[in-house]
Length: 485
Image (cartoon, rainbow, N blue to C red; front, side, top):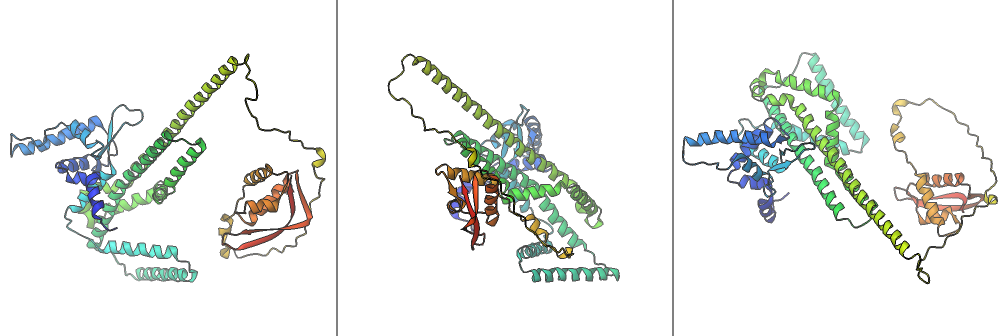
């Protein structure tokens, strides 16, 4: 996206990552937070432990400065004061919170701080800048996009056949003794790319947690200020929760977590990383960075904490709703008791005239003779010749693309129509409530009519009903006259 001047000016004033880079003590903040959290992948550190580690860090820095200027203290504040300042809402570089069951504050990095530290990583000059592996990654992603949206079957078959020919040629080449191996340059290039992407993925978990906490905060604010009905409030809350879980980020995280929790995937990642650390060409790189060998376990730990955070927020939201329901029910009981007290005070002084209006009520009379006589079902003789089919060409997608009609919804529609009329035909109901599921919904109405003892089906009279299918085409069907009473 283009960089707008006013957006950048506003971001410079308010974005925590930009404020961190503009702070006079940015080297202290970035250096310590990277050492405390990112170096060993710590997701949550108790306040006492983090304060002690910061005191040791400050002591080391002051010792280095004392050789230059013994009278000047570049870090005059205490470690606890620094942490409180970094966690202040105006700074937003640390998240200070109390975990469930603990009375000691804990700290964690915010997504903005993770972004700033990641940008600082990119500033350090790299002795090797690889382009080939990234170009191949881009080309591979473009191929996946093109193949994923291609609707021409013949073209996709040609692409797969080309891949098969390429694989066959490579297999034949290996059988003939021609085995191509990566050189040291290609190995290092791909190693650095894997290392960078693996570390970035760890930081993305904090952004996912932040989004879920923001959702919880917004929902609580809506509940506190809600003035409508409870069912509307719950519909809004769960609608927003589904919007997060069904968003691109939510579905991507779910797919990532399912893949990572698969035992087959874990064994494969362990085997691949062990193979990586056994390569002599990468011995210098892997010896200086042992963390990558267990990066998939770090992913699991970070993902598990994200899952626990989401589950905890859901439980807290449920408890919050239960508390509100308790207070609302208590208020209803108080109003009921007040009505009883007022009724007792006026029982000997009944007010003259009409003091209350009640809706007219009438008994629901159902005479035995209203029930229709038994009608034997019409039997149909079907002559079917079963032939052996080619199972390889069988399209099984039709088994999973079925339409399910909710008969309870159809009964509610019929009942709602009978509230204002004594009888109504199925054609009128469909005209007022058009079919959304097409022919399947029409068959559902006929099934409901056959099961309802008060519905009358006149097979000698035919009426037409029309609807639009999902492609926008007009459909018409002739059905027996169905009368609901």
